[in-house]
Length: 133
Image: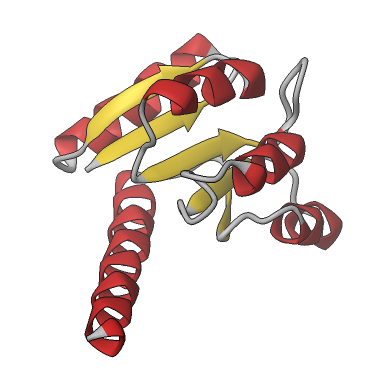
């Protein structure tokens, strides 16, 4: 499974990469929303982790753009934010995020959330395949 980590902070991207790789995932990185959309054109990841606040294209705008992308519209998106207000989380969900997590984030929270979303996605795909038969 490939995870695309989208964050403008190189140190945080490296930290997330390290945790996810330790959890058994392949990781690609994008420095902002525009970079993420360019990467999705060549390879659609299994899940995106997107920072809420970024220059050029913030997390909610990135999420909306992903939801409009034909091949990536179904990909789960975890929005990460240091903000603690409910408005930011609701804004993220309204933009199409699957789950919102607050920074700082520990290994178990991150990897556990990713695993649950990917398992749910696989279960939903299998159910659709069965109903199509």
